[in-house]
Image (cartoon, rainbow, N blue to C red; front, side, top):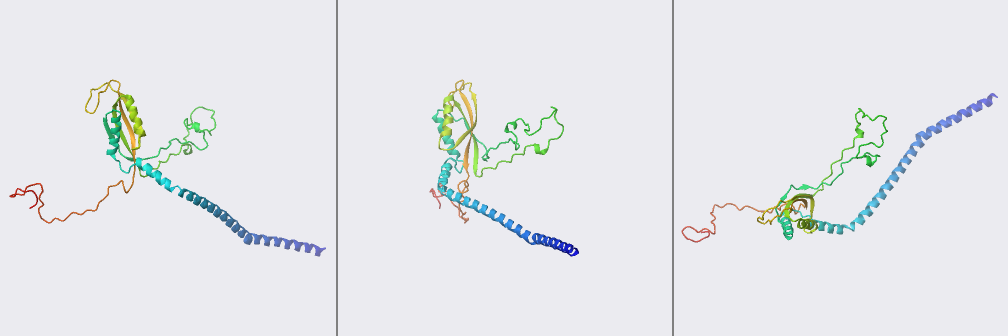
Length: 282
């Protein structure tokens, strides 16, 4: 009986030792290898996804390459309306010819400071998850209704304030110049002039604002016809654009050298030489 009990104890002890040895082998040898295998599998899947993304980008680039010639043609067409230099004289001729065609005088034409074009942005911040309809009223759609209508004296948490809107990047190379045109006359010719300036194909011109006042009448002046009572005096504000090109927008520096001074007197060819009565150099 004692031998049987001792055998069972030894068997249980051997089983316990086997379990401990197996657990030690698993945690010390097998588990690290399993973790390495899992990590390698994850990296393999990530590499496959990255390769698939690269294949997609390569196909998109190959497809876009077929449109390069069309893009160059579009850029060339746009460049016709966006010259690399202000071309002020050509613009003034265009405006004067358009006004003259409608029988209107050019009273004044002034220019503002050229600036880089900045895309417009929205200055309204709406919290994520809030109803856009509540953005104008300032009501938090996720707030619990309060039993009291009295305002809270607690300070507003920084998270409740809308994040500031980042400044918009400027469009590099695209410059806008404000132009103000003042003319006067009958309403119909003035409206035809506005339509003509915004539909002509010589130079892109967009009207941003205009101010109209009624004339009390004025006598005819030089290059300004008679104004009757009720005629319009209009100030038109618009924008013209230039597309900066480093090779065309900047003045070209031509190589030149100053001839050395030799000490000889260079006479004017149109001034008579003293004692001879003849013009020119002696």
